[in-house]
Amino acid sequence: METIREWFFGLGAKYGVNPLIFGAIYVGAIPLFTLSIGWLIRNMRAKKPLALPLLSGATCFVSAYVYLIVVGRHVPAWVYVVLAAVVVGGIVSTARRVSRGVAAGGEPEFDVVVIGGGAAGLTAAGIVASLGAKTLLVEGEKLGGDCTWTGCIPSKTLLKAAKVAHERRHASRYGLADADPPIDSHALMTHVREVRRGVYEHADAPPIFEAMGIDVRAGRARFVDPHTIAITRASGAEERVRARFFIVATGGRPQPVKIAGIEEVSYLTSESIFELEELPKRLIVLGGGPIGCEIAQALSRLEVETTLVQRGRHLLPKDDPELSGMLLRQLEAEGVDVVVEAEAKRVAKDGDAIRITLAAKGAERTIVADALLVAIGRRPNVEGLDLEKAGVSFEEKGIVVDDRCRTSARHVFACGDVTGRYQLTHMSEHMAKVAATNIMLKLPSRIDTRHVPWCTFTDPELAHVGTSEADLRSSGATFDVYRFPYAKIDRAVTDGSARGVLKVFAKRGSGKILGATILGESAGDLICELAVAMRNGVTLRRLADTIHPYPTLGLGVRRLADQWYVGKRSRRFVRVLQFLFGFRGPTREFTRGEIV
Ligand SMILES: Cc1cc2nc3c(=O)[nH]c(=O)nc-3n(C[C@H](O)[C@H](O)[C@H](O)COP(=O)(O)OP(=O)(O)OC[C@H]3O[C@@H](n4cnc5c(N)ncnc54)[C@H](O)[C@@H]3O)c2cc1C
Image (cartoon, rainbow, N blue to C red; front, side, top):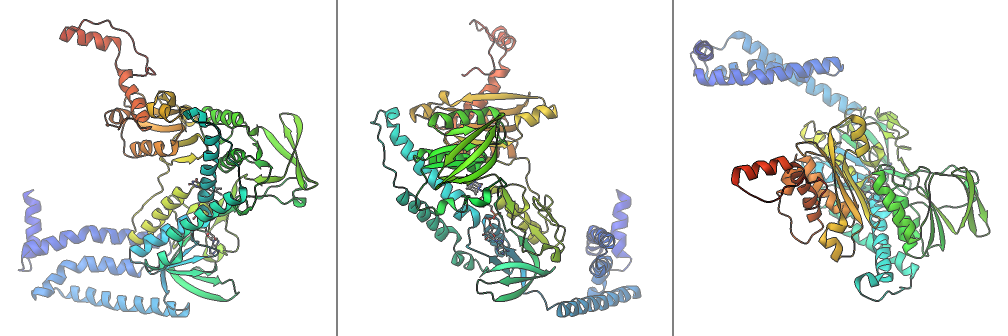
């Protein structure tokens, strides 16, 4: 310790200056000097310019001696030499950058250009602009993207209308008279589009983003070179814009279907169904994922005779098969004709209708309907972007990004559906935050791949977060499955929505939550509590100890968590209590699933 002290104070004493100030600058510069060396090595490996790290290292190296110049004492001659080299190096490097910029079309006008104004692009543009970037947002159609115009908003509006109609038909469940509401599909679809316009005007319209200092331009963007894009307006006019960084957030569109005869018929997708003026009388929905299930239930409740065709064994294959099986039975009970393990073989016109032939479980089946909705997946919007001109790699699934949303070109980031990683609005927003943080703060922010929640908004809803039961089993994890039925949640009973179950997978012993899945009323809202708990290491014990208001559906989460305590309350433990404190009641073994 004494030696270090002596060394520290000796540094400045040698030059006759305040040893504390000299020593502090000298020692303080060491980590910065080390970082500069690291930067230099990285640039050497990546074959990038070395001027900046060299200048940074040299500046750190002489920083303590600059103090000698300031106080005018005993400045060694070599310090002047290094400083002169730093100044000359700085001038040369700046001149080179400027001349390179001029040669390539001048200094970029923008710090960040965001291509695509959907959930990902709007979020990214808002964050980078709020952190001081000169930002341009380019949108080819209308701000808001898929979620506002062809996705979440119109589908949830339709589902709500369908639920109201269904509830009225079954009002006797609440002691009221059942009624059969006439469905005016023209008025209904007008309502869907009005809600959509309202969301656009309140949350997505250009003036909202312009007020944040973002330059919003209409047109389709494509890369011309790594730092330049061309924007083609609807009129055909083209302008070129340069930027230091780009965020590609161009989303995706419905995957076209390949079935014999498909070119003879016109079919609906999520892009066209919400534009209908009238609903069809009979509908075939191809695809049992979230979009297919939601629209099949909504339209069936709106008096459309609906067949839902799924290639695999389960609907919603990413979800818990037990719970998706319960949902399938619910859809069937409501009158949706659900055909699983079925492959569409042929499609043809049948007068004004469409005839589709399925191979289902070894037999052929033909269904005739007035419309066909194809919801078999989505593909990324990468065509026309000329990504190769910016050095950005992509594959069939989308633009390849790492967990920091970086593409193969260091100054180009991508987020949302165009990456094909998740196809969810909240994940588009999350990825946009990650990309913006990496660009603006240079912090290694990463996608949180372990706590991704999602929900299918059928009635009942099916929601999930974290690792699935199947993945936990195949990984050999030691965990317990906790279950709590909606039928035991008082609020669900009073509300007439006692169908469903909560399932939580938690580490044996500690009760650390590894994953959760819920089928039931407001499952999408309930999963939020479990997502927060998981993300922050809140165990089942802590959830059980958290006061939840009565009577809420959320109380079901607490009561599920109470089972962690039940599991700890063995007969032996109770006997020890009796022995210690003289209690005299009967003892019995509790099962963990026992409801207390
Ligand atoms: C029926 C349906 C229901 C859905 N429901 C839900 C739900 O309940 N919850 C949920 O989380 N997710 C839901 N989704 C998914 C969700 O809509 C998407 O994940 C999300 O909107 C993707 O956002 P994004 O910003 O990545 O892409 P998008 O919203 O598709 O935005 C991309 C934008 O880029 C523009 N663009 C494309 N190319 C160019 C170009 N070259 N130049 C300029 N602009 C360009 C497009 O015009 C578009 O506006 C649903 C989707 C559908 C279809």
